[in-house]
Image (cartoon, rainbow, N blue to C red):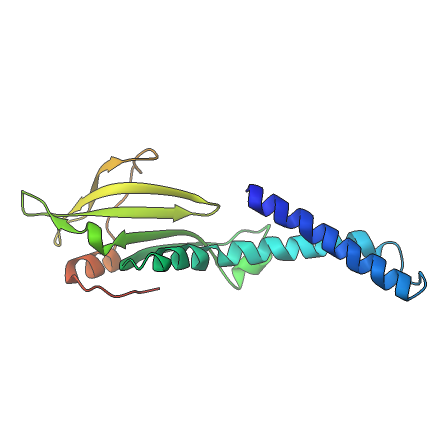
Length: 169
């Protein structure tokens, strides 16, 4: 959040500098209302850009560590105050299982660490015990309360039970 605030401040200062330079070159013929309107528009556009690219930047951070992973769930959202999300839904949550965390438990079931990234900038790590025939259940959450109704969906079951190490996102 602090980075985003600093970035928006620099965007506003950059637009002010461009406006001042153009106004000087054009002998003051640019209307005064253009400055606040262009600053506001540029900040809104940056915010939209940031909302739509956070998921890719999060995945790139995992790839930079040369870690094999499965994207086992992506939650998208639409909101009336963001009308463009009805055309291009916004990713608000990504569920990732790191291949290095998949192990066999003593009772024969599988265990994995499920990392749930949520926008803006929140993540929760769960130790998940699951069976390839049953729904998943969560044993422990490190950073937050355990979700009440978390179940393994079909894509999670397929990716975790097939055991393939490929990048899906």
